[in-house]
Image 1 (cartoon, helix red, strand yellow):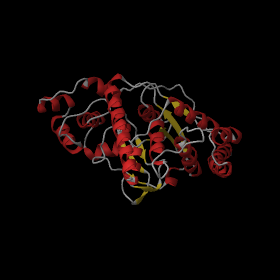
Image 2 (cartoon, one colour):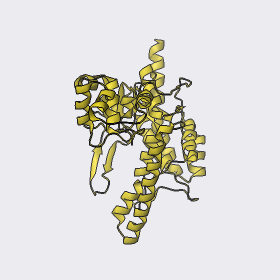
Image 3 (tube, one colour):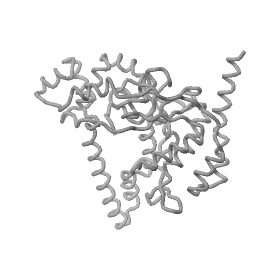
Image 4 (cartoon, one colour):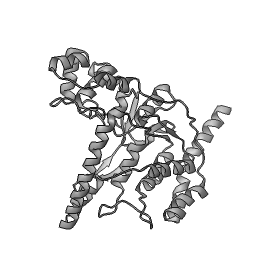
Length: 339
């Protein structure tokens, strides 16, 4: 889930159309996991085709991506590469949580507690390599670019924004700011009415824009110090210091200046602290990519969604024209540039 800095960087709500014409690097795994979590049957099971293959990620990708295209936003999905060994403990912990959630889901089903069963089912989502490849194949068919990161997709997306190849990075996690993204968009792919987990209440979800430099200026810290706060609170690479939340971390860093001095003051130790700092400040990224948005290949999209996975042909065909807004916007910009 990354580091939690919500108390320090709340962000500003924006309408989706506020980002018209902007290219946005989207953390693919983060977004696909969201789709797998929220796009489910009433009993909590994910959407599946007739052969029992999960399709929630494809449904979310196709129909939610149409919202972005219709708004004139140019998305590029960035996929995780090989995880850094320092993340292995976090990944093991996530697997254990999913196993526990699955057991609790089965118990809730047996007890007839459908609400709890649905809530626990959302915590069991798993994204396989085959599912990630299916997402890449669908993006190709839709004419949408994607990038394979060497390690962290969030780090790659942040660096693409720093290079100016995209306007912003999009993820639910605040790690993007630690990786240096000048702008972070949260809730970009899940806008609209959403049911709160475990509650029979729906809320309107809006995109939130967080800008790194104004945030650092308001907090009166540097990016290096923001990374220090994140490490004190806990990241995917370390569990953090017990009893230190974002606000206390901010206070300690402003008092003592650096992570090393804070740890000395607390008489605490974070194994591999210097290496974790480097992972955020100098992440492994690549510039071996080309960003080009094209028209969807209707036949290829239909083959993937309808022929292979049993999606409604009528609904797929009705959705495809929504991608045309992005194509028309690009044509208009080319025409403007010509004159």
